[in-house]
Image (cartoon, rainbow, N blue to C red; front, side, top):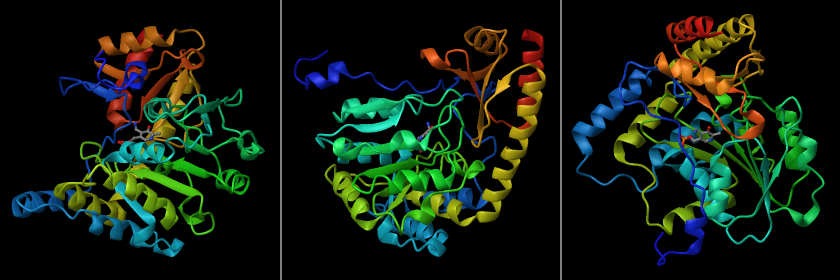
Length: 357
Ligand code: PMP
C-alpha cells in the first residue's frame, strides 16, 4: 500500500459486490436485480436522449428527475427542495455518511445489514455501534431508543438486507420520535415489494432521510440512479457534500430514463406485483423442500435448510449455472439469499434444489 495516501485507506475493508457473471445464460439470483426490463417508456426516453442530446452537458441538478419524484409524492407534501438524487442509492448513502464525518458520536445500525454501511463508516471515519437483531432476525425499534446524547445518527434498511424483514411504519415512527436530535436514515431499497414507505413522515420529522433506488423495483440497476427525500436542510447538506466534489449527479440518459420510469406508475405496479406473486410461490415451494424461509417484504428470500450446508448448496447450484448469494459472516453463514427471478428462473432453481437435497 502506498505510503503517500492516508493510513485510513490501508485499514479499509472494502465492500465486495455480488458476482456479475461473464456469460449471460446463467440464472442470476444473487444481486436482487429485477427479472423484468425497465419501463418501455424509460427505454424510449433513454434512446431519445442518446440520439438527440449527448453533446450537451446534463442539467447539473437533475431537475426534471427531482420534479418527477416530488410530483409522485406531492400528496405527502414533498417539494423539489426536499429531493436529492445520486448515482445509485450507494452514492446517496456515501454522501450521507460523509455528512456525518467527524461528528464525534457513533451512529447505530443493525449488526446484520447492508454490508456497505461498515465500509462507508470506515472510509468516512464515522464510528458506529452494530445493534444485534432479535433471535428471529427482526429489528426491534426499542433497541434504537433511549441512547440519550451518546449517538450521532441511525441508519437501517427497511426491509432489512439481507434478511428481507420489514419494520412497520409505526415502529419507524417510534424510532423517529425517540431520536429528535439525530438523523435517522431509512434505506428503502426494497420498500416497493410490500412495505410502507416512510416518505409520508418527512413533513413531520425534520431528522428523517428516506433513501430509495431505481435499481430494484424500476429495473435500472445498470444506470445507477438513487434518491433521498428529507427536510430541505438535510438535503441542502447533501448538496454541499456533492458539490464539493464538483460532481454532476446524473448523466443525460439517466435523468431522462429515471424520470420516465418514475412517471410510468402502471408498469411499476404491474412488475412489483409480479415479483410479489413469484415470491409467495417460491417461498411455498422452498418451505415444501424443508427450508426455513424468513418472512420477506423484499425481492429476495433469505432461507436456510436445517440438513444442508448453505455454502455447499450455493456451490452445487453454481455448478448448475444458478447463482445465489451466500454470506460468510458467522450468524448468517447457514443462509442463502435468493433473488426473485421470473417464474421460469424460480422453477429452474427449485428443480436444481430438489436434485441436491
Ligand atoms: N441499500 C441496500 C439495502 C441495498 O441492498 C442496495 C443494493 N445493493 C443499495 C442500497 C444500493 O443500491 P443502488 O446503489 O443500486 O441504488
